[in-house]
Image (cartoon, rainbow, N blue to C red; front, side, top):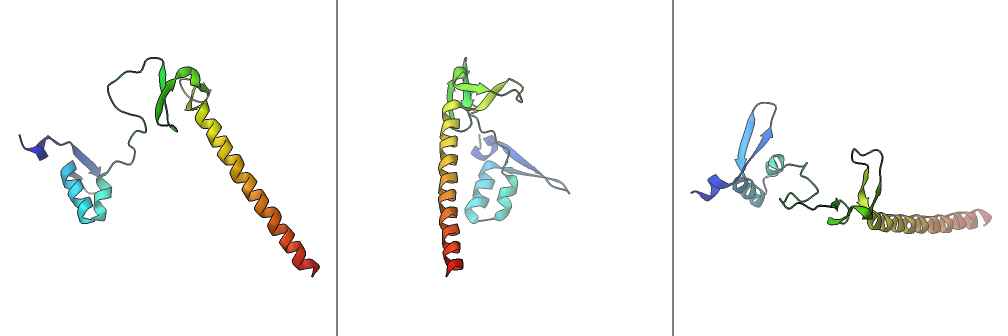
Length: 122
């Protein structure tokens, strides 16, 4: 069996017609530097693994990119299953990063304000 024939065909809906390219053809286009190759690559690929293994009692964390026990996730009433997308540990890391970023900005703003005040006083 031909290797190229066994590869899946990706379709790109154009306003005129549907273009079909195999994965190998798209890789060749990318190697040549053809910018049209990106039109054939799906941008809505899932952020979770698509393997066939079933993880009972576990959930995929979109931030950590790992499986965690369902108890590691908080509640989110806006989601259909009621469970948050990110695990608690990842959200804790996000909060810490945000607090550091805000603190750095605030320190810089205080320095800028002091500098302006010093210029006005002169």
